[in-house]
Length: 573
Image 1 (cartoon, one colour):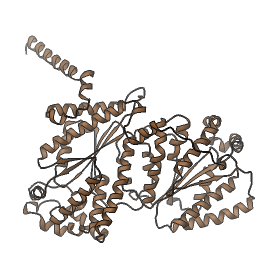
Image 2 (cartoon, rainbow, N blue to C red):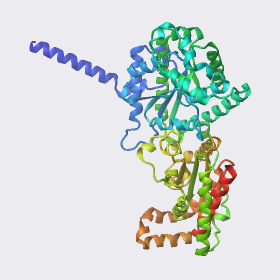
Image 3 (cartoon, helix red, strand yellow):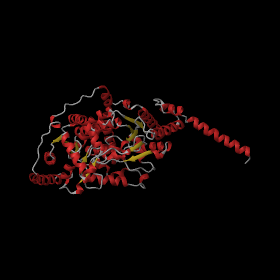
Image 4 (cartoon, rainbow, N blue to C red):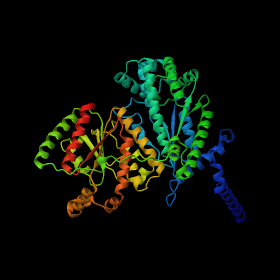
């Protein structure tokens, strides 16, 4: 090759590089990231592909700014549900080809009965995307909900292996029937008696109400949610079930070849879609066009997440909760006397030891008689109020395999990149884990947002004021699912705290408990007491009431903690 030809080729390469650089210049990128409500009709495949990958990297960059950004990076969670063979897999496959697949997380479930003592969303929380990431989630909590409702309807016996195989065409003979075998095992062991229409409809409505609130809390905590429902008619479904293409494991574990099952599924789906108006319905008759529509919806959602990420924190969300916090002035609660007037008393050591042993034995007996029911103990209180000592005496008679203790401190970076409550969701007792413990004990809790984060200005006023309702919903979901939530606030007076600080300072094996922050926080004693009063006033609910243990005597505090645990277990078991 001549020097001139090499030079010409190099010039051409440079021109292409300059053109690409100009094409992705900041101003051009900014224009492409501006939400365009008509983009579904104005972007061809090449334009859409470029816009998607541009938005993907721009969204990821919001999490990687140095120094830390003043805005709030936002993640995108895409929930994919709908009819079988409606093009869901094709659409996500197309999306993954058009974006950087390394940065697109995809998870899938097929629908299982809700786990005992857990809200229907709990099993899925570990799969949440980080802020700045995009995640596509097939099935998700709606698959579990639809699966359970279909069992309630009483048609689950139509999804057994024999019915599935008999209804499939000859072109399916060589297919893997593992999905139908799984369904057969589940329906024989978990079959429910058919319920009247009104009962399964009420169950569906209640679950949808809780899920809608859960999803609103995700949005308020910088995780945008896009819900896509793929639909095809019965004739198209029948045709695709009998073609020669291999089918994936069937979503919702129902027999899609049974007309009665499909008709009932559509009735349930219609009820769900009517109850929730935020679903995007995608026509799957043409899989290629459905994929295009889906990718356009993803683009719009990513652009919306970028806009949310770039807004100042004080104007981050248009949610009703945040608007209310911005408009309505925060009204401080009256401080109850039990937080400020604490009587001096001391229990005799011998009496204490005798009572302690009896109460520990009684509590241990109740714990072992609860039949696996989940229990969450939440301990809050002033520094050095005796939380650790009370927990130590509580668990002394327990089998160490029965419980987990979580000492909550400042969140790690990866925890900050998720919704605020995420690090607590993932520590809840979980039926999916191999460990046998179903008791979680929290030394400091999710109330840190309305306590230390509020007082130390670590959270925006909008965030901590909104947190009261988020926490109430979180605890109510746990209780509605059958979990026992037992909460303590341990109170001492300022003089007693000083004595305990000095004792820790002067005792070598206790010095690790004392930090410079502990001393500094004493200057904000009144602020912490007010924050505690506001917390007690706003989160003392019927589902999860507070037990205030106000005493300067450690022994009495420990006994009161045990008394309340015994009382709650006896009342609820």
